[in-house]
Image (spheres, rainbow, N blue to C red):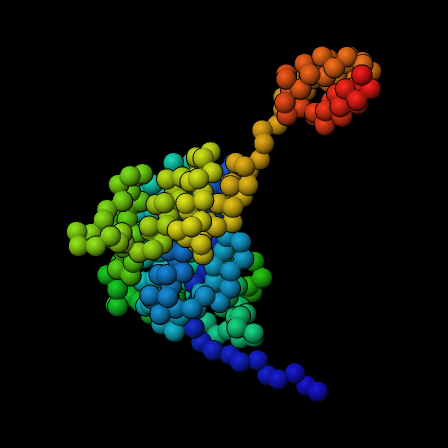
Length: 307
């Protein structure tokens, strides 16, 4: 039987990924995953608010589709402005910058995913964007020229991988410090500065912001009760996996230093053939949680029974 024909549609495609993701992961794996999760929550919410839909994600990348070119570019600008605000609460070396590319084209649709040259061009544009920036094709720029207030910088034609013809690329010029029209994500307040509304016990702001504030306030602690409090308050939260891992690590017994273990081993070797109960009592007193405590207790009982 012949395979059914693939559906096709004309859409605006937004491709985004993190600049320097491998470096961030190498420097701080857990912190990078936490930041990625919080950024993805912001991006997903903005795409939904901007009448878009996520078509695919892989690691640090996002692929979204829009029925309107205007919606796609407004959404991209809102994402970059919101992430600029979110990054302000992070140390400079831990800040996560995203690059975004937008194309308009005919795509194939299969199993909810989108494929074809239109998608490939959007991904190549994203690679050309500067960290925190947005690049679009000439078709996108021409459609938006009289419909938006921001400007475009012509970056010329570029030969891009697996695309036969050169692509004319434009950089979107916008103020990253301006507030987002789709989602106002301000810099996260410092620990202890969460505001309560005057007439209720609910925290102001979205649940994502509250959770992110809570997590950032505890992520460096070694107190397991902090992670237990997070898991109780946010059982379906973005950082549940990290919280459980940190909790398990915090509850692990501290490893005995190699030097101390060598001293204990020498002590044990010096008494293990002895028939003196005082020797084993001395061992148990000095190493109540020692590696040989069970053997010492057995030997002590055996000696007592033979006396």
